[in-house]
Image: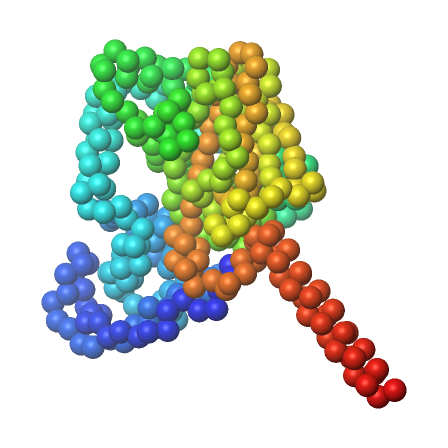
Length: 381
């Protein structure tokens, strides 16, 4: 994470050490809290459990953020921490009306849709994942992770992840959901602004399973390979599937994702073409800069095999020339990183073009210094 500071303002808030446990404070005293999150987590601190609370975000979000709280807040009551964290997270909630509309939309679908394979809705690592993947993540070391991971190009990591039986079940569930949508004529939301061919898995009940997948299996990998974009604080996601083929999206242009880290796994079916291509990591400022030769990679999709990459690693999909390809995509996000992103330095540490410009300025400065020294020597002669 590249930032100078978060927020140097201090505000006085009224809280009370003696809460009734429901977020209601019966008496009060002045309590000075800094709005500045720590730049590094307190790894020795054990966060509170938030599973029993009705919160706007997943409890894992609160657990992640708690490690970044100012030291004077680590020992206060859970209610105080909730109040403080909510104020930070409020910046990332959709506007009230829109958020309530999304919640009602999901509740309407989940209350009416009958899942075909209920075993998909609870994470079962032994049934879902390849044994090598489970063993590597359980090892919880960079060495164990690298034992199964390939890096065909800097910042792009591939590994065997999903069992064929899981891919088949998920494809069957998606097909069943889309059939139900067509029969009921219910209008569903598109996965994102780039494609209308697919379905948001979170919308019909798979949100909890995907959240657990991210927390228990993607976070351990991301904290090793993507620390510069909050890979160790991933706390929310957007999960969906997309279709490619003659009757769906044929290809997809170069773009970036609304994520810190993206997991992309081909589920099948039979297809030709459809390679995923990459074109370098860029910040918002340099999104349209040229692709350097060393940044290019064409990756051939393999069912069950995952690709993990920086959300701002530009990528696209070449034409699926035959058959039908379906991919599972999980946009993993970090509220901590997004909070700090506003305050990062002018040059993003992870943007390859920012680093290119920085080197150019350094070379120009060295050249200018050498020229001045040369002129000084000439004047002495």
